[in-house]
Image (tube, rainbow, N blue to C red; front, side):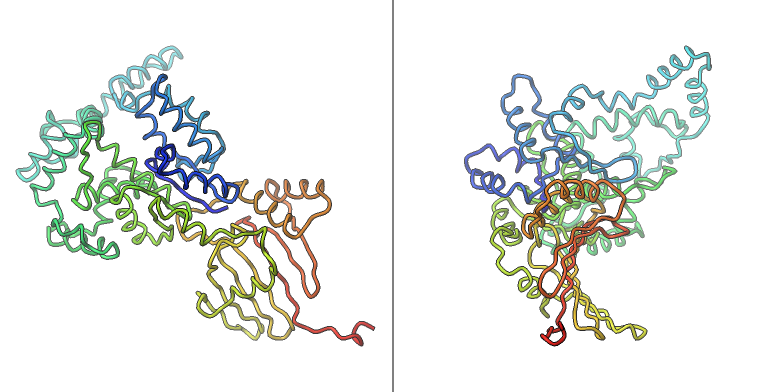
Length: 483
């Protein structure tokens, strides 16, 4: 299945008549396309939540139509491909506790005391508060930074403690995230200190943006690259930033530094808009295509995808039909599958060559496919055995983005598609083997023979991803040899 990530504006507009062709195209090709939904979609969706809002219900239904049960979210340490409908996710989301309540340190430690006291374990919260009150805040207030510090923490003083800083962090974060004017003023304050790119930066080629920002920071006297500057956001933590935090912080930093800034024109717009866009960009980097309406979102994503070597294609909604039509594999109308497979091995598509080593008489070529073969594979390896009359074509799914996972449904759909094309007489056996292939640990393979070769669908030992092998003999068998 081809993974396509739609940003929220695309999804919410699918109910409009102008997007009718796109929705019909998706509906017609849905079995070969996978549209994961994420917490970022719900950040946008919940803004319009009301029991009486018909548009909210329509948007939730659209999300369900697109995604079925494919939920993608960042866990504690890595991305998690999960199963659960958007409606099920919504049930947990609508009653979720406000995150800023969780940042009220006084309340948190008081609740901890009450819970532990019932168990006869004393007042651990009060003890922790005392310890924090004994530690300095770690922030040095100088003539150069006092104005910015004043905006962030109006009550912070040179002799303030870590406890003071922890109390002030919650209100600052809430105001920064939820008050659009406050965020714009804060961004303006940074610009007044020289922390703002030249207005011409919007015309930079996306491939040059990070390099130019590095030069800007160096001239500013920071002696840090852009990515090193992003890392300073986490320098006071014991743990380094995870991939999700690092990427979304880099996205936000592009806005703060003045590159393609979000104007936040609507009264309801705030920093959460930018944060959600950064999350959409991050989750889009786990898919084959990222479709976004907002030009600034697309350009910032191009900048970061280029920096992090992410090959995810970024397109506009108007390009969706034409771009996906190019790469969808019309399996039902395949005529000569072997001729087609061999045709992929042409000189213009070579990305890697491995000559024979240590007299093993084996050479191999890797080719980038012009489409998703059987709507899954994107590379083929041609392996030639020089001392034998034959070769092997191995079709693989290679992730050139943040993704290192696959959904079970992707494997199931691939098996069904290939089995339907090559034929499988014993349906009961097919279902049993498919279940073991997808969910089990045993070595399972599907085999088909043809005149002059063998077709094998199996799992890679290390990644457990499906691979398709065509083992083809070039030896011409004569009548005498058969006798």
